[in-house]
Image 1 (cartoon, each protein chain N blue to C red):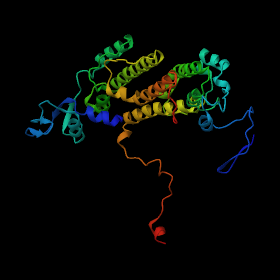
Image 2: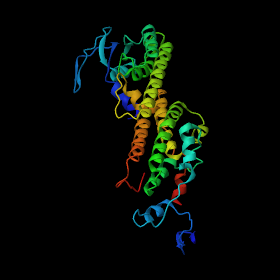
Image 3: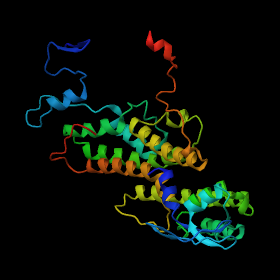
Image 4: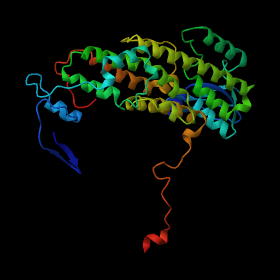
Length: 171
Length: 185
């Protein structure tokens, strides 16, 4: 098989039947067809039974960021491929989300003005976005309670711009 | 909604002041205000009370619930019960912040009051998170929580609605896909 990317282009040389390749999800989805069976997809290990058992024992201990940072999104896309294990995979993904929900909610709504890197380190991208939402709720509230909500502050977008002097602009 | 918006809504609540000036009744679109006579208590919306206080034209009378014993009772009941206690004002948090920040000299034991209200808030938020977790765990479709205030709902709202959106999408995965293929998740 020859699959290479150089710069912006994709170079596809030769597919050999029965060989194993790694291709991007978008391509696998495009090639997939339940009737013609061009490709068959192997499940990445975290969606297989062994790991599914780990998730159902205690989903909170798993480092979802390391295990491919898009556990939920990618897992949902995997369900496109008519795998017989799909119902179990879908159920595991849902239950994992449900078990980890509490910790994300509590930590994002309680950690004020502190370094949160250890709290988000093991979260996947979807969970990190949720964590941000929780933090925003907390930060907005705290900021308001202190009376800072009505103060005009410099926007973080322009804070780092160097000030230019008027005379410089003319030259 | 921003907390400042909730505060804006809270400022319509009425509070008693004792003005130090006199003025005839004023007719505003929202209703009438006054008349104001020095030394005579009158009820006005909080937004006006704060404005007058800042210009040193009145003294604020704290609401009847803004009292150490009453707040201790409320705090204790909140800690005891699993459900949410009805709060003396749907805007208790906003009013506490406004009155204590602008008129703490008119409120006896202001620091204690601040602490008591914060304690009650913390207990209520913890209960709210507990409820949210149990709602998610049981995958309920519908829940009803009485006696929550706008500020509490607001603080957790964005997080909760986003989480429930994600959960909904994950739940639709459980149905066998007929045409469930989609480009974006």
